[in-house]
Image 1 (spheres, rainbow, N blue to C red):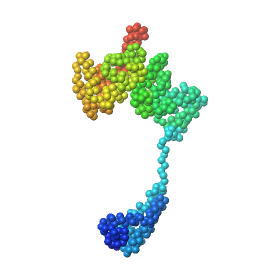
Image 2 (tube, rainbow, N blue to C red):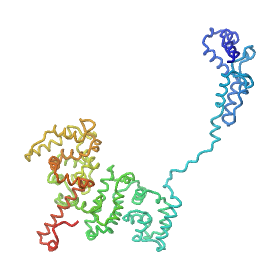
Image 3 (cartoon, rainbow, N blue to C red):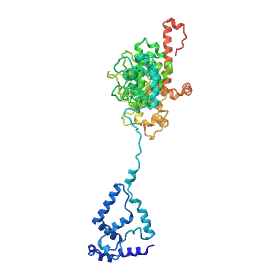
Image 4 (cartoon, helix red, strand yellow):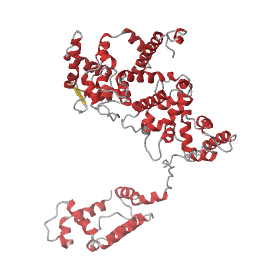
Length: 543
């Protein structure tokens, strides 16, 4: 260890000697704390002009990314910036020694550790080459890769080689299926998008400009369909945007050929399909289908299945004719005067008077969904489609949301004991009227809590219902007597049917049973009328 350095430090930090050498401190009380001495010395050193010059020089070196001066030069500058009283004293100041002097290991380590700090961090940033970040956002979509673009152009040239002047709408389907890889029912909508001026012809250059130069080629299928169907400047799809698709389906699909001479049924079928699409996919209930909702739904898979399956009834998602027939016949049965509207008295007859008056009142108060009907107190066909889908498939999330709003009387987002008692009270009265042994509400409440398993026992949230497979039975208990009794008896036939066909929903099974019933009733009616065609065929319904 450097003995001289230690002795110098002791002499320098002697309070009496400092009082003698520093005139500004002679009038102050004796200094005892070493930290106060160091603070005074450092403050005086910072106030000197030479110190300011030294600090400015170091900052300039850092900004210009030039190496800092060596330690000996800094020491010299620092020494010259000290007060003259220290320089004139026989006691050397406490400062780092020059590189030429043989210092102690303590000072050697100090010099080694302080040297890297003199290097400017700005200099290292400027010396390193900036990393190139590839472009990841494209306002009009990512452009296609060169190989993909050339492959698509080759396919387009092959199709248009036989049509120099361009393709007409009936010839354009090969482009839609083979080049664009889209369902064929989108062909007229895509043709219209490329030919906005309605010239009746789509040329090769026009198609390449829209599909390749417009970056449609690199989009996913849902985005492609969304941009094809939506109107210019719109950020959503409306029900009318699907009408060209349904017109093409009715005009070309072999499974709907028997409807081509029945314009009334064609229109009702198209409306029903669109209503079903918006019921399941437009979860916001605004009537405006967004791209996000389209991607989350299963509509595209159903559209693609239309090109693979000739039997329309096997496409049970949205497009089944049998499902449409069941919905429309149910509506027709309730609409006694056939004015295409249903009132409370009509709806109370649904399902052989299965519903309670209180739940029908809630439906017509338009709490679960605002009616599209312009007639006060009446439900339109579209409103009925939403109702029957919600009533016959209480396992789906749209149905759970529909009925939750009905039971939640105060709209606070939870179903309480009092609200459940309000609706079950009428059920209890109906059971007494049919001499059915009544079930006490406290027993029903315990059963509901066991089925749902809510986070809080005093209320049930929508999230609790969505997390249970038995949620639909809760609503049946509260306002549908027929289904409540069926749930209590546990029909073995229905249980076996559910196990054999686990992929079918409650709605699928209901539509299957109802279509069979309607077909048999229709056959019996034809037999009673003496139709000669019926006698030549068996009484089994044709599917």
